[in-house]
Image 1: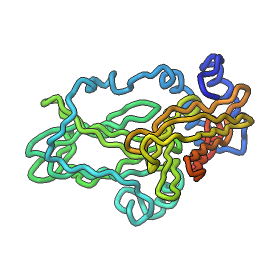
Image 2: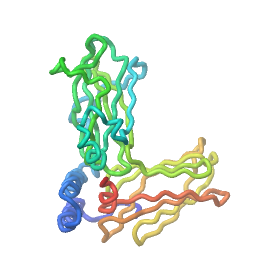
Image 3: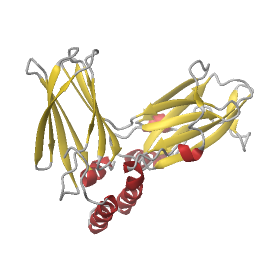
Image 4: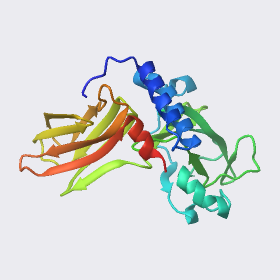
Length: 283
């Protein structure tokens, strides 16, 4: 469970793909989404930096930018008005993640590219310029995109979306992230959060609200396996660690993390990996 299986990753991808194709109760959109995930897994597992091929990883992260930039998930038809027809809204919100990207205080006459980085890759959402107090598309200055909504698809529950606002002229960038559909848990002032790094091998557990330097008993449950180990919270009462919940011979399953403190108070968080993660990620 902890530590990578010796199975060849491409073989695992093929097995998972065959499982999705044979499971006829899932619709075509679901297994096509799974196919995209599976094709990306070998790159994710090797730690590929998808932003490197875009060419802005060497750009400096701005720390004193006047730009104000907020991201939030759109969760109601009322919030999505203007991007889809009324008849489409219910279906869209049931099958897609929609994130509102609100950018204000952009310097006059400056140009930016907005990139979206997911586990399956990084792509350019749109390029825009500031013109007379509004934001317009770089190649279509007649199109005002102020308050534009960005539609996201092929997400996994627990996945973080990272947006990069890039100024190529100044070679600077701003980065924001959002997890539209998180794995999280809170109890008695403590919290746990799990980030999906890839659907099979790599998850990141973070937690907080513990006592500084407190020794904690962490138990991981995945499929038929159970494993307990000890960790120590840092000086701020936080923990951060990697999880690899895969079980040899299984293509996916529900999983759970339990953290017990020195007072025997326990906080738990349920999540999933592999085919089970793909199943619950479907809206």
